[in-house]
Length: 450
Ligand code: UD1
Ligand code: MG
Image 1 (cartoon, protein in one colour):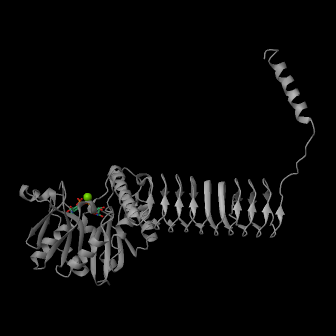
Image 2 (image 1 turned 45 degrees about the vertical axis):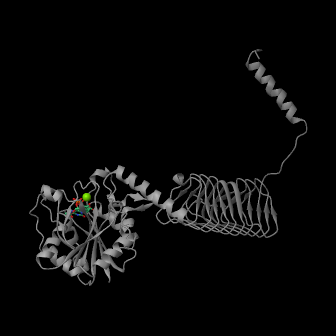
Image 3 (image 1 turned 90 degrees about the horizontal axis):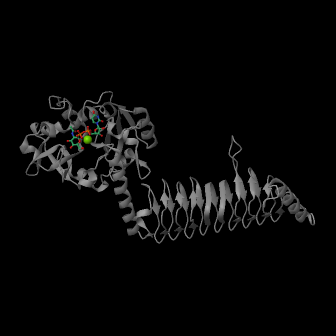
């Protein structure tokens, strides 16, 4: 069934105490909005509508990055029912199911939403519910047999209704046309003076339509309202990713010190040592070794490569098989071909490094002239002497060498040795004379006191 996602993200999120709209805060390097949208990845999603309000321009920019088809603005936050109605015009030509999600609820599992889609075969309206350990202020699901009769908000509930522990997660699904038609019947005569989305259940039942509940674990329905909840959600997310990595055959020497992004992919039999951070868009193939205190983002590490300790791989770092990147080495937007090595204290930016090339300690690609970035090309089997400055744009040919301490400003042909440093002169006996002179000066200054 083609599905339209309607993701509610208009709320102010004032308890975050932030200039940033709540749904743009991140867990595992991805915004809450991205997590929410990803929870529908198993469905046949045809349209994605985000209802924005506070900070709508920022939300729109992120939504566009995520490929969302429409961002509609709810100028005044008059309630969840009113929020969903904002999507009506954008979906006027749409036929299929509408699924309402909250942008601040990142952990709903794709399997759960698939279960809801299946339940739509039986019920016109399907609500995602959960058994709450502490039902607090959640809306309560009032059921009768297999049917959901209505949802009552905490503020409007009687004591008897408040005793119900089956709660509303907020996720609701119905045929799109039916959903909007039910919403036409929703008023705001309630304790909050809001248009409640939840009222569509009773309206559906009154119209003789059926409604049902699909349940999930309470943990999935966790919503983020404060920085403390965000920090807690991050911890929950990291714990899940660590278990996932271990189950996928990755060795984590100290799992609790390794941090993952939402999209981190690590192949089987890779070893990850202590205190490693994976930012967004990292792929590590099987059998690689990521040593302690390394930081990786936007990079690809191939089989057999060894990274770190204390390495930094930045966006566009592409490490082929058996590459070695050692301590205090930073790689950005650069490809290192099979077996290339940069073992110590090196910066490689905007470069192509050939197979088996060796970059000595302290090699720097001088890629930025203050205005533009330039490329460095190092050939196969080249040997770059320690402390070579490669002033880009520049090319070093296959099997070429550079002398230590060279500043390479023009291309080096294949098989050549480039020496780009001033010639050394030795002055016989001059060191001894200089020491004596310096000692005399020191003695004069201290007035004979040693
Ligand atoms: C809602 C449900 C409640 C459920 C709870 C789960 C209603 C009436 N109540 O209550 O049954 O147990 O969520 O967390 O639906 N939003 C808008 N525009 C608005 C109002 C809200 O976009 O005008 C968005 C918010 O940004 C948020 C979501 O909708 O992402 C839920 O709104 P919130 O005010 O938190 O609803 P609750 O009172 O918690
Ligand atoms: Mg809420």
